[in-house]
Amino acid sequence: MKINVRNFVDSKAPNIPDLLIDMALAVIDTSVFEKTGINLSEIKPECFLDGVDIPTMLMSGEKDELVKPEEIRKIFQSFKTKIKRLRFLPGGHADDRSTNLLK
Image (cartoon, rainbow, N blue to C red; front, side, top):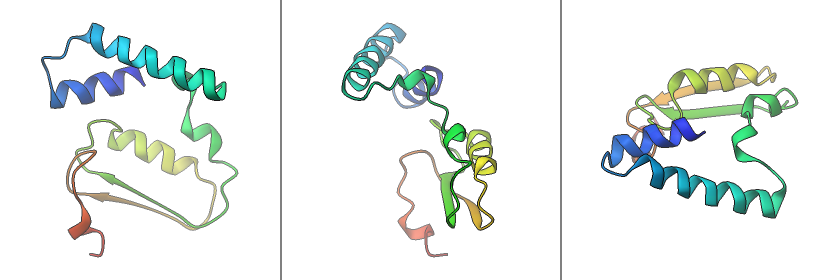
């Protein structure tokens, strides 16, 4: 997770020091752990998807800076449901894609 966040921040605001990013992530990790008992750095979404048996559609940006297309493909393959679809839309992680959703 840290690498993804650091890469994302670097792509949007390259002047933010790594130390500041690490400090922010540490605060977030601690807060989430205290409230849920979950360590964010240990979460692997693909480990939770083998029990999904409902129709599923994943959409992601072709140039997503936070969750790379190859990571989305790995997550998509982890779904065991027979009815699933993966769709890549133009843009990055937080870009507006509303005009592309219905195409």
